[in-house]
Figure 1 (tube, rainbow, N blue to C red):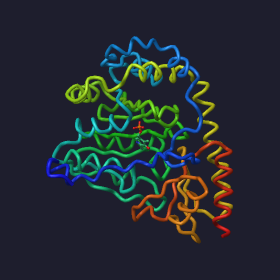
Figure 2 (figure 1 turned 45 degrees about the vertical axis):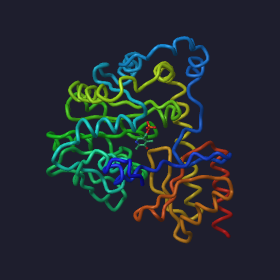
Figure 3 (figure 1 turned 120 degrees about the horizontal axis):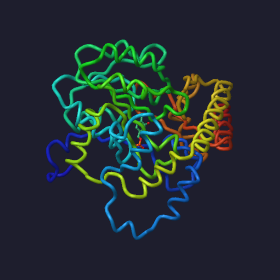
Length: 352
Ligand SMILES: *Cc1c(COP(=O)(O)O)cnc(C)c1O
């Protein structure tokens, strides 16, 4: 605490990201992709004319927005890009949710959402997950200044099909519905096709998970022209150049390689299902997942102790300190070898 901080800053409780360890650990704690980005990305970085770094990047990142528009069957004017989807989300909170009525979100979802609410002084109301740890779409209604959730949800892993989202959008027409699709490529169903009929739908995506580019920081949003124009207004009042030249060029290259993309995500999905079966054999309850992580708990073992035991064995997973999730470990899907090491370590810990 410092007397030099603005009063509001003294009140903040920042988001705590998963640890980025300095020592070599099997890292299954922040849902990064275990496979490298598309080979075209390496090519772009190797061949990039360094002299171009003298110049500012394209403030509109048009090449990347056009590539994303082709990928998703929309116009470039319906695409917004930012420095990671966390930044896109922050700009969306400022653009759409700073208004008198409360923002609605599930009680368990990406924990950055309430952090942005406090930063931007946005009132919000949470809705409890249902008995199956699913986002209760029916309960996300009533007087609101917006609706936000991740689909598939994090850290629970369940995703609703597009038709269920369409039913939500049939009811909520007066405020922005923001769907965070960070994990959709691992078995979810994207709501982007609903954008054409719903001017209040904003779908947010990231290159950090399924495109293996967490280190490059590329996020995007797809929506109606009016929503994207609003985001541009706020972005251009804050930072004209959120994406650097390398990220723009490498992002285009990543989108260019459908084969690599499909092979990686299919491999992650297969490893996830194999890991899931082995965790169940060890006595874990494992929530169904359409993401690149599993949320699991064991009746006979304290999650905090398992976390510590794994850490001592060189394996890092995520343990949340919240009351609702205290029993659980969130385990990112790594390579098959990494997951073998995880299962071996858990076998030892559960026997011991
Ligand atoms: C990882 C994640 C993000 C952040 O992604 P970046 O693009 O790396 O900022 C956003 N939303 C959810 C639900 C995530 O899990």
